[in-house]
Length: 193
Length: 354
Image 1 (cartoon, rainbow over the protein chains, first blue to last red):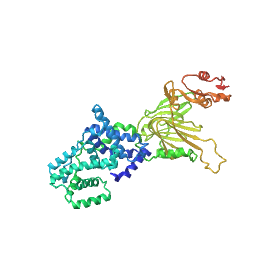
Image 2 (cartoon, rainbow over the protein chains, first blue to last red):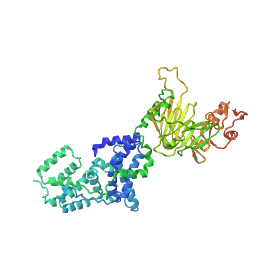
Image 3 (spheres, helix red, strand yellow):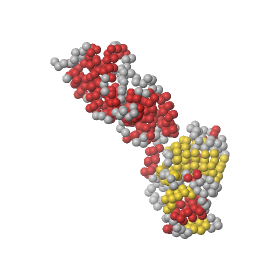
């Protein structure tokens, strides 16, 4: 995702300095889909996710005089989306949900890609199970890295955790998956010679 | 523990976070445990199902966003070529401004709309203020001693153009396809849907534009390339300095205008907010902590009288207040309650204060 960062910086500057409508529309195109999907993964309501993503964008516009000093607008947008989504969840649950760990996250493996046609449904199911047996925060990290292509540092800033935690949580996720893979391919556990 | 290490390194590799050393280490491990390649291949291929029930249509999403919040950014739609802020900053720092010095640009600036020829002229004489509704629905409150010209057929033109000599408050009817343009002697103002005050009396040294809501774009007639965007609650004053600085030959002799942008603050009087700059529209003269000396020209214009103060101490008295329907005598009587002074009014409306 870093490949268009300089592009993104130009866009942010055009909004901050020139109040550029065109740049704002461009930024909308770049951020809105991932923000909406991320919010949906937390909220499970397309309407609420749309609302959150729209509110995130207008927040950026309203704060445009200060956004040039923000080092990473994408992280900034995700952080606002996370907070807005948690607020909605908190309200809906009568105050029960206060952290991401209380949120239920469903990740389902996409089995429509050509590669997956060769892999049987059983494996896909056991991989799905492995992923969804993970704690919520672990799933969110896995999702942000794999789906949105965010770096450890970006994820750590969004979730307010250390990059070490991001790394270890991802390793946990992949370990669970590798167990399912090992069973499927009947691999012997790696041993020392 | 090789298994754990392989997964750890694979995880970092797939996340794009592995260092060259780690990649090297992983290569070595994969050579020793080739079956681990299955993990890599499978993990790499995992993508998630689109979580949303429907694909996102960006155009449609932006349209909806615009419906909800467009009023906050739609006004900026047509101003891509303008980098106003940097200009403004530059000017503020310089606190002075290059002026080529003439009025000629006024006629050339809109050379593509030479069609503009005013057919109607509205003049407010002394002590008269009135509200005018233009053919497009725009309301104009014309202040005393001011003149407004416009074309009756403005609706059929590309631009809605008017000329102003004096002071007026505009509440411009929204019509994005037909920009509203106000010509004054020194500045030209392009309106992007809005309410604001323009004070441009010929012969006065200051041209002032105060914006209440919306956005306007302002250009100086003698330098039409430079444009300034004004935001709500901002006032822009173009000051012509009286001195020509003949002694200072080293500096550019052309510098004799000063451009100042400032925020306007409401004046709170008996729990109501008033803007000094636009209160005349409601037939109110508002002033806040102003010296008698500063008030004299305002009172003179308001009451169409001539005021002379013969007492230094009285000149420095400071007043805050609103005048609405008071006569000059009532107004001065009220001021006397706050600070003592004597005055008399002659038949030809000359007020002498002692």
